[in-house]
Picture 1: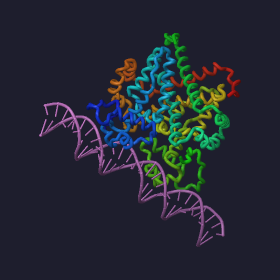
Picture 2: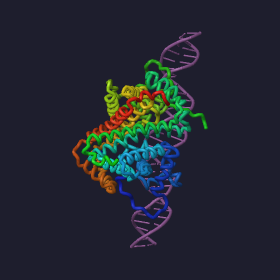
Picture 3: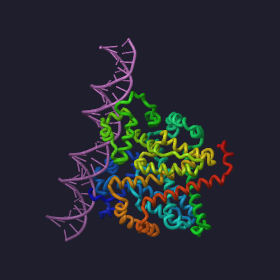
Picture 4: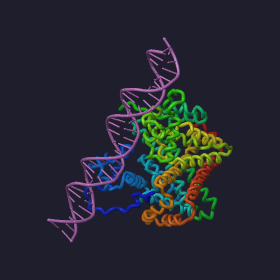
Length: 249
Length: 249
DNA sequence: GAGTGACCTCGAACACTGTACGAGACCCCC
DNA sequence: GGGGGTCTCGTACAGTGTTCGAGGTCACTC
């Protein structure tokens, strides 16, 4: 087997740059994000991206090793859109980061497909997790528990938001509203849930409900996030030696 | 704009089947899962799959509308691998489903890439969520809170496991061990975390630690899952008479 | 047995994809 | 005037998913 190395944009050191002229990496990444936002993950091709920039497709390969690197950079751009809150209260910080990350993912649904292929080592991603960890350390967590608690918040946020974003973006790319999709899915849902009367009943309930589905999803996200934070708080009170600072929050 | 419909394997009714001969959909799905497990998401192509089955690539299109449908079916196969526990204790049921789903995702890392493009309407996926919801209803949740609580557990489980599975599978497909990858990533981590002294310190700590990374990740997952379940339990004790409010809204 | 029509297979073709390679263009510095 | 680095891009290759239509194979009916 050949000597393989694990590579990433963040493992290579950047090339020297001449004065601003022609393409630049920042410009390319910006265009990538735009293209992804407008037309979705499947529509991104190097040729299209080149055309959008008024350049040949293969010119991009001077600035970026391959398409994956481009996606890594685009991903960190999304993390960069998360506004980092300043607050003393760890609950406020963590829940703000969670809601901010959720908003960023919803605004850039292709994020789902990129995440996970590499540990997020971009500066913006690290910034997010550093703020989170700092807040949790202030809350009273110590050692690896800080990482664990931070991971719990991020995992929940991503797990809850990514599929939702993917779904709404799939709808958008087909030019469908949520109501239309529900209409198309209804018979299948009907048939599929026949074996499960209890969820069948709730499906019909929510289909007939007049609550805006968007609000519905926000309520759901909030419910789970509160559970996560309450659970973390409980850990702190259970090990009172850990929670010296807890009273202030 | 043309009249678009939202389609899925689960929205079409199945074709009539002649007696067993030649290809069958079950056989194709089984082969798909095998191929995905062995060679990963990128390696799956219709031609390769056809070859594996001793058939032409385009023959598959008789049994399956397109590659996406194939992936939907494969995804439900993964949900089918989750062993559904029987227990009176809602904590036992939910945590067993969570661990079971985690194991299934770790065994089939390509699951990540499929999830979210469609609401999981396959029979096995519904079975999972029905068991979860039934347990939560027994615990005392009512109305939409049942769905919210179930979604919280699933979201956390998926969000925590999917990136981990994707990463370990990326390593495997490059023939690297976790230690080798860490070695390759180390300088980049070093450089990137320089601006964040507190996580920098913990990075070095865990790099030098002798704990098996697999165990480390299990501990992390367990930590978060307990937090979620504790948080849910807290909601129950806080509103002991929720069932009264069931009909409103 | 002949005929019919549904079920099923598949080769060819189309319009794409990511990217390796090498030829050239531009520009700065000696 | 040279180099030599930075940067662009046309061509080419090996693949992709999917459509189409021609054909083959069977279970039927007449």
